[in-house]
Image 1: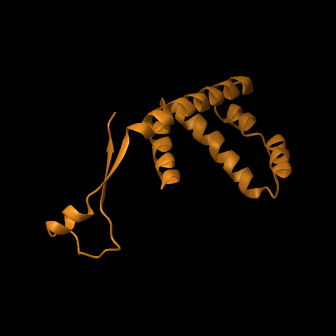
Image 2 (image 1 turned 180 degrees about the vertical axis):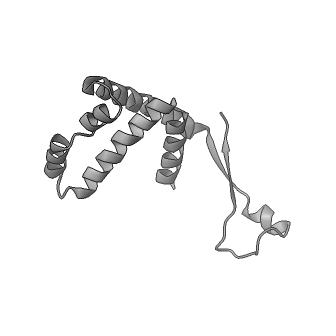
Length: 121
């Protein structure tokens, strides 16, 4: 559950980025994930990153200097590292299973749970 909460908050934070920064970051991240899937070992992954640099590909696609892309991606990652823990602390998961069953909104199936996700920001 913690990993899902983290991924949920992370994706919401990424959606808050300005459009150009969001597209740039998602492009680099997607390219890195593709290379990670292709890699057999960590060393192979590093080699793939060197041969098919997501930073250089992003620089070409977004008509930017590679150093500028690298700086921007690092800046976004730092912001995410700062922002995600704050958002996670604000996120509340409330179990409404009993209330839904009490009011006949749920089948009474004990396998089914009803939750409300609250963002107190």
